[in-house]
Length: 211
Image (cartoon, rainbow, N blue to C red; front, top):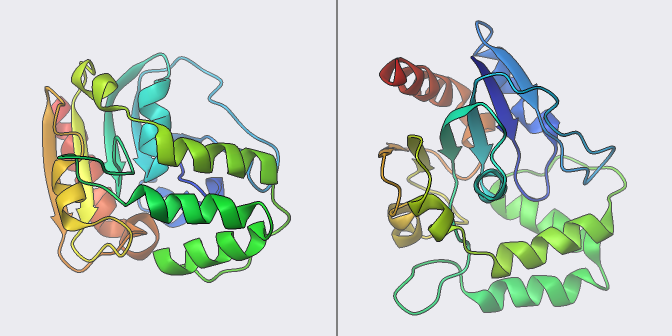
């Protein structure tokens, strides 16, 4: 069993460095969507636990790799925007990001990362890929995939997440047949970076519970 990591929008595989360092007993593999360099997909079919951050959980739900035995979704969700009785971020917020991204992508990306709690510099970006996934962040809904997901899911949220409203965090993955939840009481939206020990303990407990 290995751990397979999927990052969220606006980040790359390097996002997982601190968390992987806390999980040295595990083999690991990181995907990279290719926002800031060459993309990388999972290359083997080994049994695995997915560890996904934010939009990475939606990517995992859309195309789980062969061998997946369960998923730990950190600051994750199965849909980002809300509508009707489904809580989420207002679609207008993402509409404004998309409109501005067309003329000033670096500023949109920097503002988004700052809101998440990250002000580290980033290199040249693949604007087309980022734009494509920004639209997916607004439009995609993976709740049906969650309802059909046969493996256990652990939702790990931060109580002070500046990006995800509390009702959205509470409703994430609600349709999953096998769902556990845990909340980091002083965490924000970048738990693998700010609270890697908390995340590592949650992953170990999840794996032990799976047997």
